Image 1 (spheres, rainbow, N blue to C red):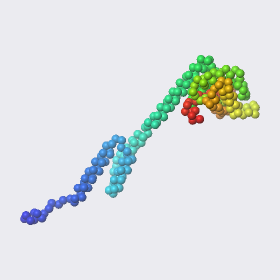
Image 2: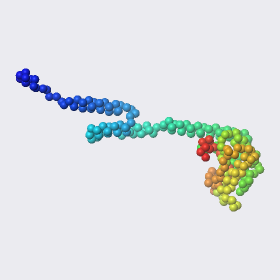
Image 3: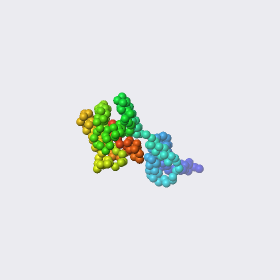
Image 4: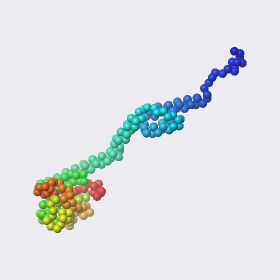
Length: 249
């Protein structure tokens, strides 16, 4: 082969655009490897990005992977308690602690005054409840306070004045029909109102801290099928409302 023929002969080479295409493929491979190396990657966002790349290059092949498993892992992470959930739990824990402390103070005060045999103290999500049998405060079917209950109500007033809480006075009856024309709704409400009036007018409790309601026989705490249960259902309750419960009405 002559020198002229050698000069005319050239080795076959790839088109120039293949070099750029090869660089692009290397960059894409590096990009996806980095995405997969992130432990806290957003699986949904990754799927969107990879789908956009496939669409851009017209690639329709579906490659099996573990994206579904990763998505499940991300969901489980989202289900874990967040800072807001933890805050709610902490608030509820403090509320229960406050109610328990309040109940202990009221129980100690009632025991000191030797009233613990007559009344019941209960802790509820709303607050602390002092439950008084109706017979201690009213004669059967009456809405007028018994004289014997006035000293007792003075002690209740001392408890109320010793706390900053709003107190709900709630009247309850059993399911027996009233012997008069007055309904159980009227009786339960009138008894609560009579109690409030004594606390405000005589015991000087701030009326702004008191609430009144009557529930008739709609909230029994015992069976109305026997005399003992009916006696428990006839009651007046003083509920020392937790601050948030009082604010929420």
